Image (cartoon, rainbow, N blue to C red; front, side, top):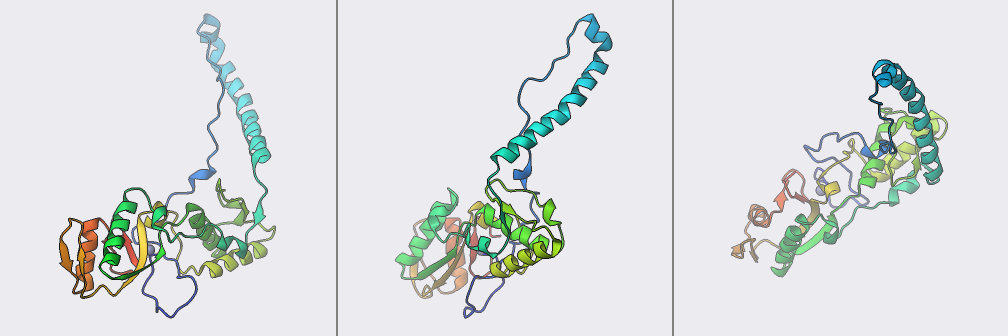
Length: 255
Ligand SMILES: [Zn+2]
C-alpha cells in the first residue's frame, strides 16, 4: 500500500493512495468492443468495379456498419451477466492479497527469498498487502470519480469481470452509493488503475526485531543490520527496493 505513515493504532483498512509515478493510468481497456469478424466484401477488379465501384462500396459500408454495430450490441446484451447496483457490498470483493504466492513471477521469488532471510535471522515480518486485483482498482477508481463528480455514472466504462451497475437511475442515488464505497475503502486520494501492487510487484510489510541481527544478503553474504538503511541495502541485493516515504512499501522498482 502506498500510503503516508499512519499511526499503528489506527484500525481498519489503511487509506489507499496511488504510488508516486503511477499516473492516472489508461482508460479502462476492457470496454473496447471485440474486433468485428467475418468476411469483408472485397472490391471486384473487373471493369464494372473499376468504374462504379467506389459508390457501391461506400453504400455497402454505410449499410453494413450500423447493422454490425447492432449485432454486436445485441450479442453483448445477450451474454452480459446480470448487473448489481454499486454500493458498499462491493468493497469486500476482490480483496487485496497478503500472500507472497500472489506476486508476479520474478518478483515473487525475490520477495520470498528476502522475507525468508529476514525470518531466518529472527525478524518478525508481517505482510499486509501484496497483489491488488485490477478489479479492485477499477471499483476504487470509479467510486471515487463518481463521488467527486468527475464522471457521470452512466459513462463509466465496463469491466469484463465486474458486473456492477453504477447508475441507480438518479444522480443523487448514484453519487450516494459511490460515496459509501469510497468511505468503506477508506480512499483518500484518487486511485490509480495501475500500480506496482496491481502488477504484483509490490509488498507492504512491517518488519520488527531485525536491528542487531545478522542476515544473509542476496549474494549469500552475512550482513549485520544496525539500521533500517542496512536492511534497505540488503533488500536491494534481493531485488526488493524500499520506497522510503511509505513505511511498509517495497517494490520491484522502488516506487
Ligand atoms: Zn504498498
